[in-house]
Length: 149
Image 1 (cartoon, rainbow, N blue to C red):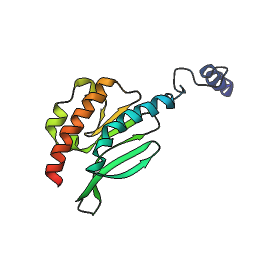
Image 2: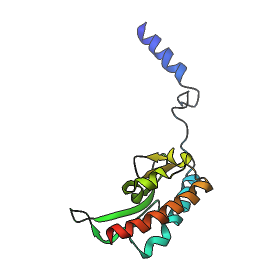
Image 3: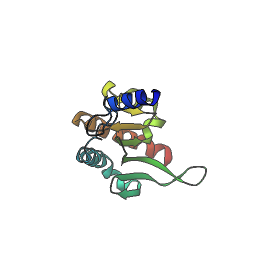
Image 4: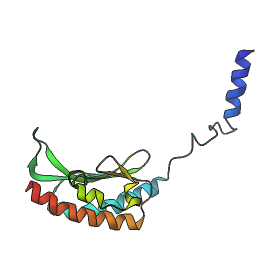
């Protein structure tokens, strides 16, 4: 009798298509939106290829690092990058981590996209965020070059 009750409860949670009700099995955002977001964010970093080394340039993954400055363990210091993840597209900008003034100058809507001190996550990109990130990247690059060159 107890097993039948459990089965009934489980059946009530699953609809005819075998998807859990309540949004737990909702489809992931469309890959086209992720690709468009990735492309827009990659365009922000692209002009800095002359200044930094491209350490990753493959579908869904693009990163830049210092050509000469190294960490204590000998790895190149990363400047920034963009990568398509499972549930969002991440934009990493290391100067934001190292410069509190850049972080504090971010708009509230862009701050909501932050995860940690230098990562911004998007499912779709707002043109205002692209414009703001481009300006922050430009400011961050100037300070980054002074510090590590």
